[in-house]
Length: 195
Length: 195
Image (tube, rainbow over all chains, first blue to last red; front, side, top):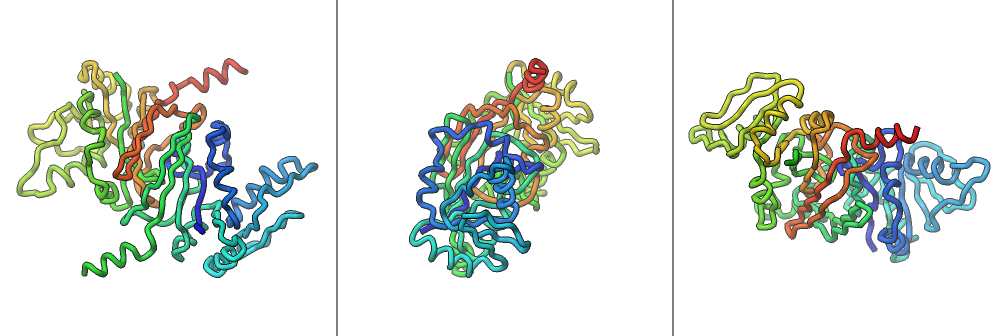
């Protein structure tokens, strides 16, 4: 069971452009090389922030308001927000707020051995990292420069660095990179042992 | 003859951290896999902004003020700045200001068929791009997240996207990616033809 932040990112570190658009990403197509089908098969619970949730509502569920589409995920989904947001009929969506740790415990139980996917954004993923609950960051790097938008992550993780487990270039131009995060306290424990 | 922006970058798009440090990069070592020796052999002229120049002075040339080191580049180097900066004795350093296009022509003549290296920062590289003078961005991606610092680039280049020419993961954890930039007007010309 891993908690994974799986997202696409521009070469300069943005997961959405300043207009909340993903056109820069969609131009590369899905493609047979996408790791998504294999990834989602192992996911047992999903977490997302309110901006991501509202993006899915606007661009997917209600993109044609007269003919709403189904919620795209089968897994139970926790939406973190301090605001009251509308649910989606027929979808297993649970609203959460505050400390991510107790919610992570609930998600873990619901996932029953499968992985937990943090969809975004960067601040929610960082909150899981703060509590030592984020195991991996899996980024699909798009060869574009956006020069602004929503940041990949909102904490520094540099020393010790994440460990690169996989780098997989696709013929579309996208490159997937998988990083294992240092365990929280790993650098600290080492520093303490040296002092 | 190509004009290349060759730089290291964090996974979230910063070429230096908020303290102007490169410790996050140097922890990965140089390594036999570095493309730098091969890259620099083909460089005939160098451009950098004032922040980069002052970084080289502080962290290399005058890192031990009583025993100054030699300027690290053999190639003629143009330093772009609106301020008056100190030269380095014995080094071929030329100060420039304003529009990059006429300076690029001078650099091109001096390079005599070899490449032009834009060392940084992101705004200087963007100014060459604005004038249609930047051919490639070659980034060495470090698997770290800095969450702030000096940006890779300060313009949007997304549609059409740069073309990925090479992705080369190193055993150190660094990954080099080479991107050919769309010719300026490529998207515009296409849009005009369609309208």
